[in-house]
Length: 456
Image (cartoon, rainbow, N blue to C red; front, side):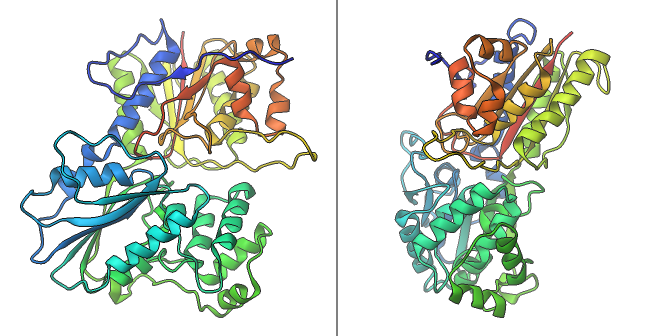
């Protein structure tokens, strides 16, 4: 049976004048409001001003990469003294440049490239960024604007690797179920710009990295593969990860990894002397803002963690077990309440028979599939999971919603949740139900946002 098209949940992120919806009258609107508040907290203008230094004696060069790159650049342009020199280049994902505020002069060039698989535009941008570091002096300041997605956008393959090699390796890593830390360990050692190498190129200038965290633990060396910070991982670890997931690299590159020839600058290296790293937005901050909004609406709120990792569907099942316990027994939290979590889960793509349609969806959608399957229509439980960058995987949705009647409505359309899980097709399932969450690009990225509302 072909499911009819259904209108989806379109979430407005402009909170000016927005009133928090009643949790009991409209549970899904309430959860969407919490998500919008979390995204608002992660906007660069909310946290960047207090971390900007004074202009240097020399010039100020802005370099950067990530899904928030363009909005971060605009924030610097708005806050930097008009009389102080400012120039630079950042690269962001296609269609992730926000509208420019009226009257804001453009002093930082913004380029677009592909994410999550790199392309020639990202390669050209990385080459130009390295070129801009030539001739820097100790009187100069480099502001590096780093956010999630920068690893794919800032691509400059190591000697012996082609762009096509990097694209294949990236795809295989994305489909393997590897954690973000594992993926970025490999990316650092197969790059000429990541893993601290951009900082080395900026010497002897002072470098201040302003970053928006999208990784569990907020480790700057993992965010966008740490182009300006020391890297404690090794070539041997990168080789072990490649072997673990059965990913091949050209023989010459494999030999360089074995010999340690592609090693990255390490902690304590003099190249990082005097450098600073400032976190201007983190997953925890966004979750805490959502919790505060819920409490102001009279709903108890609990933040489980901002560092949850693992298979998305399995994380969904664990969250479902917690929600069922609260709904049925009032343990470990009393109803009504909101349970929040963040982090970066993974999706392992299951092989499909030849000719079968490709599944569509990302981490948030697959979490919702696993959650809905395990909840089994549990009364009084509503949920939303969405990526804070507005893009779940490579589709046009940020995530999806789950309600007590999710499975019943799907069954009425002839949709079986098990079949959609088998082919990693969360998008198709929730699209048919009208339960995709759609925001468009948010121009920031603090990773997964998950909220479960359990009512009396």
